[in-house]
Structure formats: C-alpha cells, structure tokens
Image (cartoon, rainbow, N blue to C red):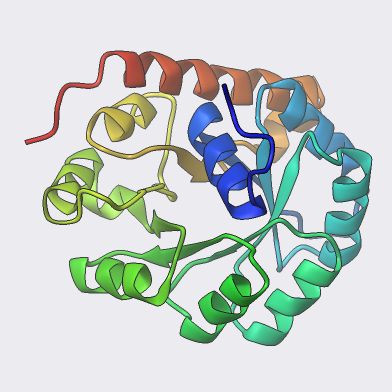
Length: 226
C-alpha cells in the first residue's frame, strides 16, 4: 500500500519518475497559461515547469496550482536567486528548477521542504548539486554529452536522479532513459509554436503523450547499467 502522508518533496519526485516527463512552458509574451497546463496534463504530465523568463510567471504558477490542486504540480524554471525561489514558493510553486548549481537556491528550497532540480553538466557539478541537497540533477545541455553520458555519470553516482534537458527528441528520449535517466525535460520539445499555431493545443497533448509512452517502454526494457 502507498503512503498517504508523503511530503511534497517525495510526491513531486515520485510523480516526475512515474510519468518520466517534465514539460516546460516558455513564452515570450504574457498569456493565460491554464490552456497549456491542461494540454500537458491531458497528455499525462503530472509535473510541469514554467520558466521565470515567461512574462507574468508568478501569476501563472499561482493560477495553475490553484486550478489543478492535488493533480498537477508546478515548477518554476531558470530560478537563479533565493529571493525569486521564495516568491515562487509563496505563489504556490511545488518545485524549483535551475540551469546551474546555485547553493543559496537549493538551501532555501530545502528549508521550505520544496524539491529542487539543480542544473549541472560535469561530474564535479553533479557532485556539488548532490552535496548541496538537490533532489534531482538536471543535465543541461544534455545533447552535448548524449545518452551514454548518463551511463558514465550513473557509474560513479549510482544514487543520483538524472533528468536530461536540452536536445531531447522523440528519437533519442528512449536512449536517454535506457542509459540511466529517470525522466526527460525540455521547453522546445513540448512547445513548438508553429505546430501549436497550426494544430492547436491538441498538438501539445499528443506530444506529451508520445514522450510518456516512449519513457514507459524504455524503462520496461532498460538493461542493467555497468
């Protein structure tokens, strides 16, 4: 039986691993993000991200968190300082994501009991993120190392939760999972403006669903790591 007293940190990590995707909303103009969030939820995502570079991001996080309370957990992405992290948490954010190791952001998130997925690339950066208390390590830009780079990192840090971002595609997502990642992330991966303009929000739903299925199958067939 599952526990019904899980912490926010445990819940968000569990949901990220269960779906295997962390799709990101990144906009250049202020828009109502509820539609994007619903499209991602309908596709199977249970944890989504809105970048701090999106106009009106705090209001968007607050609105999505209220609309999908207990069903969808909202992260703020590209959080670079503790003050911003605190604002995100006060506006209902359930997760802090950043592109680099920022110790004061990790410290603040842990103080509030909010998970943090810290960005890193090298083995040294991964170790720094782990030691600072990062819940997962977001390998960025993942395309630089490729899928097998996940295996290299897992060989020396078997306990680390890796979530590659940057350059994830339908063609390589399964390889990243089979090589040791627990989930995949990205913005352009799930937010192709031309596709959305042509096909509507349904394109996002279908795209998220494709990745969820790819990750599920990859995890079923993932070989033991060296």
